Length: 46
Image (cartoon, rainbow, N blue to C red; front, side, top):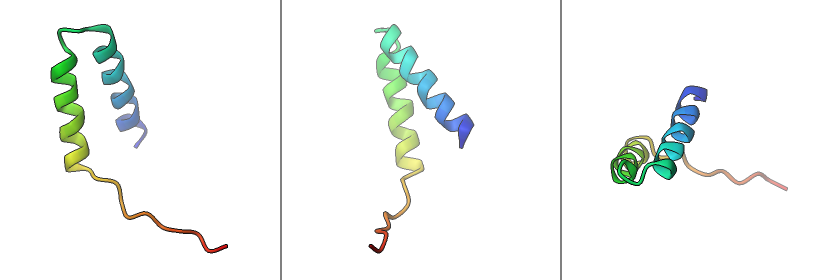
């Protein structure tokens, strides 16, 4: 999990630093989100 988060932050930095690479980085990030959706949300009892 830590490696994935680090990769996401690194891609975000590349996207913000390089206008030329921004579209490709967004494609990679959206593909990751499509392939690894978050799990179901749980509500804690109060």
